[in-house]
Image 1: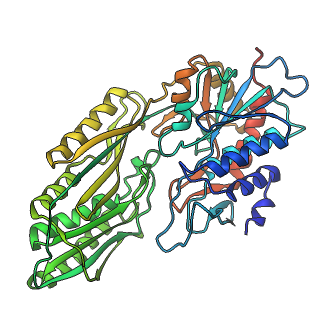
Image 2 (image 1 turned 30 degrees about the horizontal axis):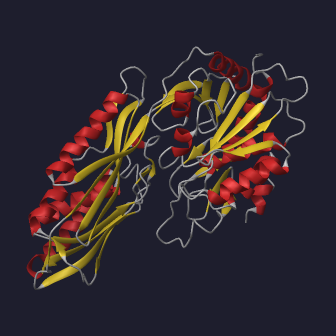
Image 3 (image 1 turned 60 degrees about the vertical axis):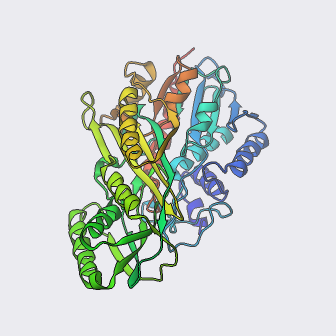
Amino acid sequence: MNEEIRNLEPKALWNNFADLNAVPRPSKKEEQVIQFIKSYGEKLGLETSVDTTGNVIIRKPASAGMEDKQTVCLQSHLDMVHQKNNDTVFDFNTQGIEMFVDGDWVKAKGTTLGADNGIGDATIMTILASKDIQHPAIEALFTIDEETGMTGASGLKGGLLKATIMLNLDTEDDHELTIGCAGGIDPTATGNYEQEALPANSIGYLLNVKGLAGGHSGMEIHLGKGNANKLINRILFQASEKFGIRVSSIDGGGLRNAIPRESKAEIVVSQESNEAFKKFVAEEASVIKAEYSVTDPNFEVVLSPTDVSGKILSKDFQDKLLRVIYACPNGIYRMSPDIKDLVQSSNNIARVLVKDGQFSIQCLTRSSVESEKMDVARSIQSAFELAGAILSFGGSYNGWTPKPETPIVKLMSSLYKEMFKSEPLVDACHAGLECGIIGTNYPKMEMISFGPNILGAHSPDEKVQISSVQKFYGFLLETLKRIPKK
């Protein structure tokens, strides 16, 4: 199936993407892909090293006649988000991605594609191996664990890189030149709860909210897509109030940086309330489906009879839990007053797991303003602590302050207009890019991020546009030709 990918143009780039996607590379499990990239550089005879964090650095001298140009760092991350549809049998730790061509798009069978940021990696690999591309001296930086903590960028020490310009290849719209991004922090609420025995004469059900579109919890948070954890909580809250249902377990969402698409809960309801409860679920599902008909047309609620074998949450804890999830901010918190249409701060309730007397709720809070990021985090902390949870914060990283007047921004803006006869969108994005973190140790390095059209990143609907990859690649090669002198 991947053979049709290898026939796409530019063939060297797509071949590298196919080779890369044959290597398992989920976040925090990048050992195989680190060795793959390291071996790639060594086979080319290029100076190759792996730093103490696991980032791979490959250096290539300037092509003939380009020795007087500034050194450029080409940067992408090696890891990918591992998400799949529930009915897809796939092991991200052992299997390569199964890709196929659909018109002008490359997609994956039931899983994330890894174009984020595999297309960037494959592009850099192609330039490293080329013998006829004009380019200045290059430092190729392949970072690890971008998707779940930015630990590769955070662990990159100052002084390792000599480049004065960094081209980050991790933007997902080919008419954008990104010059700033949001920072983030990971709030996690945990705790224990009292359990009770199943009430007599009760009927068990599995409530399943599914079919939501999901997507990137930063870049797509403004689209108003349904959050499975919030929507199932909406149903459970009302059913608890109206029919006295009792919850045995909740299991929803997955990775912090993905808008949750599915959530399920084991519940019991009394025999006398059973028919009214079933009618309510059907009616509420219709209401929610109408609300989300544009953003999530495949949304559905499935209520299936099941034998609930475990215990249930105590009534007191169930009431607190459903209320705190209802109260927790989700989605846009504030739009930027400075940059039109830019989300400034947001939160994603990414993962809810309540089972066997223990619970964990994971969020990802983003903001391009550090003080506001912490303000949102504290609001989440306040809500969950009222429910008796312990709040911890991890994975904090800084945003990237836009600098629109730097020479590389001016160069690429002008070049884009020259090549494509239109103005690029020079802006900041509501996602975590590694530029802000790397810039902490390399404050004088000029930075810009760009890339091809990638839709549905962080979801099994992820796809990359073939014609856009060609556009992006040509733009990058022309940029390398025009890098300023030292």
